[in-house]
Length: 521
Image 1: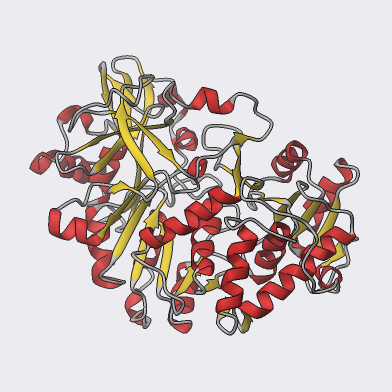
Image 2: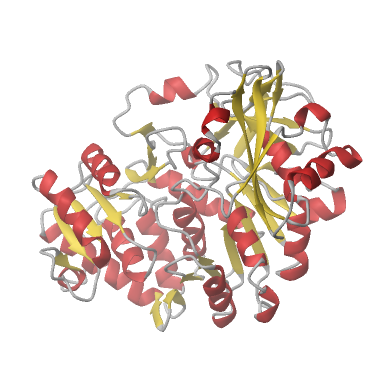
C-alpha cells in the first residue's frame, strides 16, 4: 500500500533500499543488515495484523534496548500502530497504570519482565503479550511466531499526519505525560539529527546506551538509521561496558547524560582505543566547564550538548558545540536553537512576542515543527502549556547573552527563596562540581525559621575526608559565589538519587536530612 513520504516506514524503507548491505543493528555478536531489517519488520507487522491488530492500535513495549526490541518496535509503524516504550525501571504498579491509560492491543516484553507482563495482561482483558526471549514459557506469543508471517508489504495506508509515537516524559513533576507525536514529527527530529551531529554518514556507528523509554532512544538511533548508518546497542548501562563496546565496534558517535559521562571519566577511558569516536554528546543536564575540558582531553576533542524536551522529541531546544566553547568561551551556555525550532525568553506567564532583552532572566519558551499534538487522555493539554501566541512554556529559567547564546539558570518550580532572594540550585551545583574532589553535587532548599529556606548541598566526594569547611571556602574564594548563595548545610552521600530518566531527583534529597532539619529547626 502507498505510504506517505514523511513516515517512519517510508524513511526506513528508503534506508533499507539504498543501504541494503550495510549493518543496521549491532548487538554483541549479532548483526542485522538493512535488507534483513526491512524483511523482519514486514514479517512482524503482518504477524501483528494476523493476530487482529489494525491501524491506530497501541503497542506498548517493556524491554531493554536491543535488536529484537528495535525490530518489534519499528514493525508497529509498518502496520500503522501507535508505539510506546514504558519506563523499564518503574514499579509494576506504575507500568500497569500507564498501560491502563493507553489501552494497548499488544504488550511486547523481555523474558525477565514476564511477571509484570502477566500482571498487566490479567488487569486488561483482551491484551495480547509478546515475549522477546529465546524461550517463551510464560503464555505469551513468541517473537518467532510473529516472524513466521509472510514477507509482503502490509496492506495498510500510513500517512504523515497519522499518530505514530507516544513518548512518555520522565515524570519528574508527577505522573508522566504521554506525548503523542505524528510520523511527520518523528521525521522532523530525525532530519534535525543532521544538524545536531554536524552531519551523519552511512559509515557512522552510533552507540546507544539508553533505555527505550528515553526520547534519546527514538531520536538519535532513528536519525542514524535514516542515513544508512549502524546503531550499536549496549543492553545495560555500565561505564566499563560502554568503553569496551565503543572500542570493539569502532563507534564514531555516542550520547550520554552528564552523569554517565562523569562515570565514564572515572572508569579509566585511556585504557581503551577510542580513536574512531568523532563526536561525544551530553544531555539531560549541563556539564561543568571542568568536566567538558576533561571530556575533550580524555575522550574526544569534539563534543556537543543537547538541551531539549520530550514535548518536541528533543528538537525544540538548543545545541552547543565544542567550537563555541573553545573559540567563544561559551562553556556555561546550552547554545543556540536547533534546526526548525526557535526560542525566546519571556516573562513567566507572559507572551513570546514580548521577549526579554540580553541578559534578562525569564522563562524559556520554544516552538518546533516536532511539537506533540496532545497528551494522551489529558484533554486541553496544549491550551494549558502554550502561550496565547503559540509557544511552549518549558518551565526553565534562562537568558540570552549579547552574542545570542542561551544560558539556563534553573527551573521556575525549583528556585530556592532564601532571605527573600531567589537562587537557582544549578548555579551552585556547577561551582561545587568544579572542585577537583567533588564527583557530583545537588542543591535544594529546606524549610528554615530564619531564612524561609536555607540552601543545602548534597555532595558525592572523590576523596575520602573532604570536609564541608573546604567546600565552603571553595565557594567563597575567587568570587565563585555570592555569600548568600553559599550552602548553609552540607550532606555527604555515596551517590545521588536519580529519577527514572536518570536525572537528579531533588525531590528525594530531603530524606537524607536529619528529621529536625527537615522541619527547619
